[in-house]
Length: 624
Image (cartoon, rainbow, N blue to C red):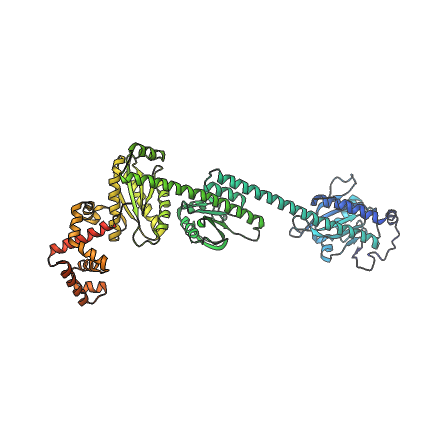
């Protein structure tokens, strides 16, 4: 047995003259015509399987070679695997399709990047597997050449040709085989490119179909949850969608299925993780694009460090949500980014619909309740019918709960709509027929009375509302549970009492769930503040001082207020106002000279303090 390596400038078998009958028969046809036919055959294929089959067929166009095969080298498995073969013989019933690399000429050909020639495989002792098959199938000379390309599994390939006779190869014979190999490598690369182009075209078509399906979904009045579910079927990564228009977080499949299954992931999201994602969405700038972040989550006892892409969902220049895509890696290609943008656009459209729906419903319910609580009704039956069309039976028993914000809350114009959305969501979870309306800076919630445990339902709602508001704005709200209303005629008085209580809470810096007894006599006094007698009492007691302060920019009313609050102690009052005690005494004497106000007895001090309190509450009480 002889294993020969071809070196440029010399024959592989320079020991043997190239004068065999086989070679002479090969010279009968012009080589150019053979190569032309071979090239046409190889070029006619469009897929890899056909290309390889044409390659082995072309190798046997040379009269010297009877059989050929292409083998892939599976180095991980340690075998050479036959991919395709050409053997016109019908005598052999079975073929050997796997060869151990350790004793195969294929590995030698790849390692040296040179042809390996076995002159007579039936006599070879170096490759016993080939010898056994050569005897069985009746072939003698074998040439194994590296193809210089890879299969679909990225495995290197070799071409093996066999002759039924012993062939002493000439340089022309070897050049022919190497030309076949070169043409085959070109064709294989072409097949790879065509396959990649077809895959890219299919992916593009899928992306366009996905975009069309998403837009159909969101324009057919679907929900955010259904749109998010569809998005996840198109993207290869786990996602979370945040809807700030409803303070809702929709979780898809688990980003770490090996640690947490999808059901547990969604349970944890509903239970404790949703607020972290809501805060993340609120912190995104309206002008931000795709941002890569590290999210640190505590989920089911596991501390997760998840890379994620955060894409803001913007409507009318305002961030209304976010799309979070986990584990964006190098495999996330251009078409995946196109799908991501389609998902962002579709979800933005869905949130825009939700945003506009909320604004419309909010405005409609606010206008309705504004008219109901005003008591100025032109036609009660018409107003009742309008409410009924919105699913509100104003003559059914219901409880009013009023929610206000402390004076310290900044940007109430922005906070009230966010709080309104949260209250609507909580109220809807509590009772399907519950409604909420924003009346100025107060949100009025109507909760239908349950047949049983009505007080428990209201307490549960208040507890969740306080917890939600503390998380949303960092402080407790002011909550007043009003009287039960059994008909539309009960609403104006119930609203008036709730409104007065909230104004008192703002005045006295009180938060949480409040009742009339928390403010002593002031609710009763405030309820009479509209009477002429009360207003006359205030005007007689301090009216001149109020008008003087307005006309001359003095601070006499505040001086009297602080002086009374500190028990009429001059030094304590002066310290609180950052005045010298002599200046304070001069100011008090000036007040006495100008207005004749005396504070030398408990009765006069009480009357003065009452007038000041009533004046503050009357000044604050403006109709909504």
